[in-house]
Image (tube, rainbow over all chains, first blue to last red):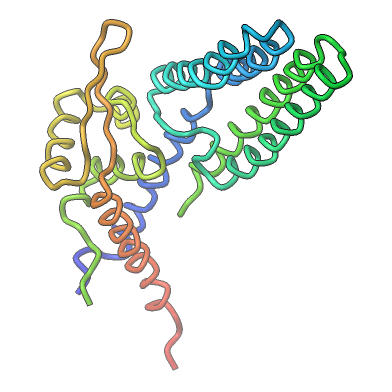
Length: 152
Length: 103
């Protein structure tokens, strides 16, 4: 036996959709978020160009501490805690495609920096990664808004 | 067959809270309060009911010298909400079946 009628169920489903749209609207990362993540990655790349001694700082700050802090700050600013790069299928697809550039740029940069002795190659690859991070980030935000607001 | 309808989740504010939480890891107390346009005390009461049922968890953390509360669905809450939504959809769709011309 149904405890509610079809009309009430429909109204409840509409309210659910409304709640999801509110969350979707707020899920967009602050303007500085993807720029910050990109700059962290740029720092990780550039550390290799600067010198051997800077590589550990590049890895720790650029790949671990930087992204972690930017993520925490974005969560507090938006009031929404979620893994922006993997929260929805659409965001995940874009992240995987953009993320594939990371190992390619690392190998290319190291080959040019150390193999061909072209100083600053890793830093240049870092700039490319920064651009990819920002462009992919905007698409990820659009995918999050679309997917989070979608009816299940 | 056991119905997925859940009396604890169904009231409007609690249903919306669960709906908002269902697609994220957690939401800040302030975000939920603003989205529902309710007072702190009203939201606290609703969250307490969900918390006592074991459907949500409340985590407090300090950030920028202020205390922030974060609300998340528990695995049980997620399961019950999913079943409740399925039941709502079933009931909502049942009218389509009823409206079909009978031979």
